[in-house]
Amino acid sequence: MDVSSYVLLSQETALRRRLDVAANNMANMSTVGFKREAPVFHEYVETGEAAPDPAKKTSYVLDYGTIHDTRAGAFQATNNPLDVMIDGPGYLSVEAPGGGTAFTRAGFLHVSEAGELTTPGGQRILGEGGKPITVSPEDAGQLSIGADGTVKGKTGALGRIAVTTFGNEASVNPRGDGLYDGQGGTELPAAQTKLRSGGVEGSNVDPIVETTDMVEILRAYQTSQHLADSMNDMRKNALNRLSKIS
Image: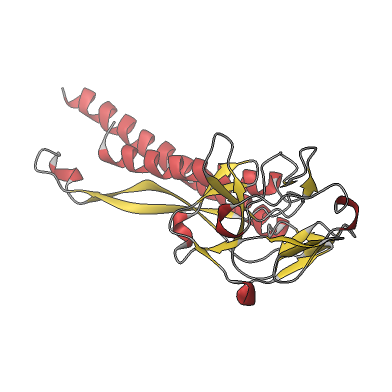
């Protein structure tokens, strides 16, 4: 293939990536705490001396990764006092599968059979200092969560849910099942923690935006295909003319 074909191929690969991300957003419209993702692309310019002359100043599309939209989703009331939504930036800290700490915006909380506050997936909620929050049998039926994250039962305060923020949201990466990996987070003090109980945060995906994006991707791909067909016709005409000359 010539240089123009490689350029079009890089564009079509980027369009495929955009479509995959948009489709994943649509699939998670109803996922609690889900943050819309958007692909990031860089321009790659081939300037190496070993490159053919036409390619030395040719721009290609390079898939750089994805970022997530940090805007909060709408509050969805559940009337369950253990369900919480973070009112502002930050993530709930949970014990990651396999060890370590993961983060989530999905505020469905439960009391496990072991008497610990957990997510529906069984990950333990981590309180201040990375410690799990233990609930005694007498407290289990009378739990409440304050705006500062304090978990209270019949016998009094049992612990405080930790909310962690990140100065650079680009360092927070989805790992699946509503969980994120992150490095360099800061645990908010009680005075800065804002939780809203009795409901959870909905997905911030706008189906109209995603549908419009899919239509734009389709049209861009069709344009790329028309260009490829036109270049192919030009090559055929050139070969036909050369064959007549020879």
